[in-house]
Image 1 (cartoon, helix red, strand yellow):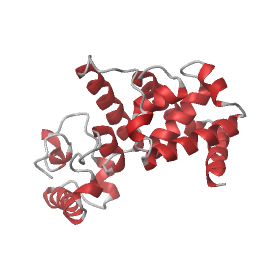
Image 2 (cartoon, one colour):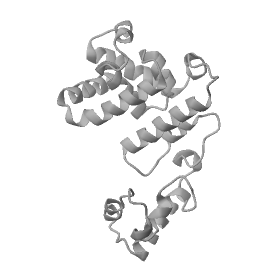
Image 3 (cartoon, helix red, strand yellow):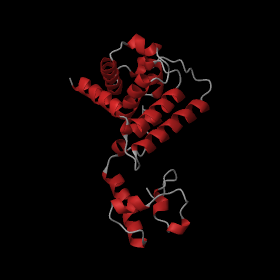
Length: 211
C-alpha cells in the first residue's frame, strides 16, 4: 500500500522536513502511540499494510468492485480519514465524473437498475422516517427549496449510511443536481454536531427506522 499513488500514506514514512505543509501527522502517530521517528514511521506504514493484507479486496475497498461504481466502492470500503474527509472525496469524485461525461443523460431515472439493491431499500426507509420526523409528505418535500433543511438532513443521512448514487438522491428528493446534494449534505454534516434541534430530529429519524 505504500506505493499507492493516490494516498498520503507514503508521506507518513518521510521525514517531517520532506512532507508537504498541509499534511497533519501529529494526531495520527499519537493515536497509535508511535513516535515520529524512523521506527515509528515504519511501524505505522506496516500496520496499514497489514490491515490491507488481512482483509479481502472486496471488503476493504482497495479496488473498484465489478458492477458497482466508484462512489459505491468508496462508501462501502474503508479509508483512513474522518467522515468529512470521505464525504469531500466522494463529492469531488461525483463532480469530476459528471464533468467528464457531458453527454450523459442527467435526468436518467435511477430507480430501474438499482430498485432491487439493498442500498435503495435503506435509502427509502431513511426517507420515509425523515418524512415522519418532519411531519410532511413526499410531494411536500419535493416542492421545498433544493437546499432546505429537511432535504439536506435526509440527504446527509442517506449519504452517510448507504451507497446509493448521489443522482438517485437528487432525483428522489427534488434537489436538482449532484452538486446541490453534495453541497447541502456536506454543510449539514458540518452543522449537525452543534445544532441540538437537528440532532433531536436525526435521533427521531433513526428511531422511526428502527420501529
